[in-house]
Image (cartoon, rainbow, N blue to C red; front, side, top):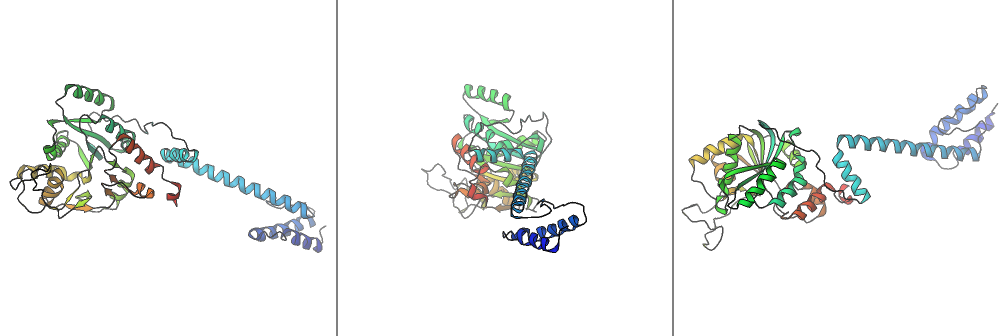
Length: 369
């Protein structure tokens, strides 16, 4: 039988080491151990397994048992969270693993997508403008932000390309279209002065195919797009008809005849352009497509696309033109700003696109806190 002085010894031994965070649990355990021993039922002490007559050695052994159990519990918890996270979001977990192990895996598509033969509704269509010869940039888009777009999520990546006078380029485009099924050919010869016509042709293509689009993203093939960030931003917008991007205002027509952007008074008589969005990338609600096409038929078409589509026509149909700092045509100055960008016209080459994508998908450790 353990006498009261034995319990005093247990108490002084157990708590002499300064384990403040476990004081109450150990105290209760010591009392329970003394009571059970006194009743002839042996000893029972959760976690610590202290014997019937505690001493310095058994106390330290018990502490080691506790520490091992806590470490095991922590490992199981972290492992379970890692497995759950991988199941719910495998690309991000693979990215984190690559970051931790300092490894860079070769690109593999997250979802191998095959567009249906006759799609009728898309939540998001990314209409990317590309010149026929920009094969390498289309490859860069497919291997980076284009991976987020798939038929499973009712989203689609399409490269809209005009006709080329070079037969060899047209033949290569046909092969590329067969492989990826993400190229739409437009029936016009692309040129610098056909900027607005290009967008009108894209809108007409969507209508002619009978496709309903909830959101249409117009982007240049050399622009990087952060799809998850864009989706988060759109969720907070309550307006049902709008255009979203980098707003430019109070700009004047270039009257210098030597400039490539020269605009005569016959082309545009006003002294100032209306408020418009930069054409490298902007998002618009799909319910504007047919309205823009109808309004275009009533207007004298102006050749500068962003001024005409998001400025002149947008003003005519009284649609909200929303500015956001997350659309930019300049490279972020700080490394932690990369994941915050939605659209950036700062990836003019294949390597630049891949590098930007890596900085968004695998941000520096210091940016995570």
